[in-house]
Length: 88
Image 1 (cartoon, rainbow, N blue to C red):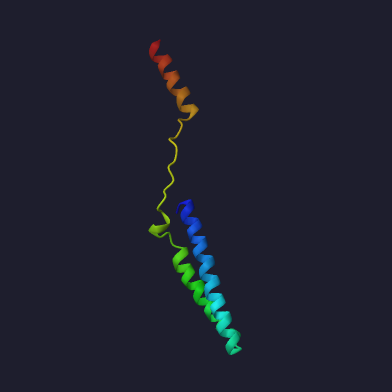
Image 2: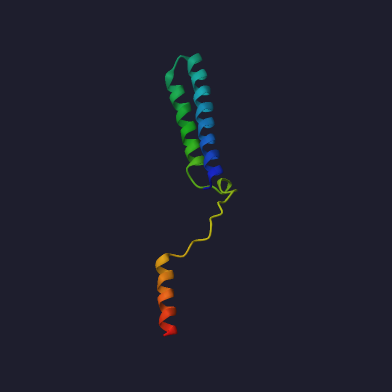
């Protein structure tokens, strides 16, 4: 998952939780029953976990381009020693 995919995943999580929580709160307020709030919030959590936890392909639209690796100094010193031995 790239950095923009992480941001998208986090925003989806927040919006889904807030949406389902607020709908459940309004519904539970009119019915005067808190269990509807909890059930609605639980459904929102379940949906957001299914959408946000796995690494879906739409989270990888902007892959990170890494720099080329730099060779180790120990490898360079070994190759220099071999060259000096070949010259002798």
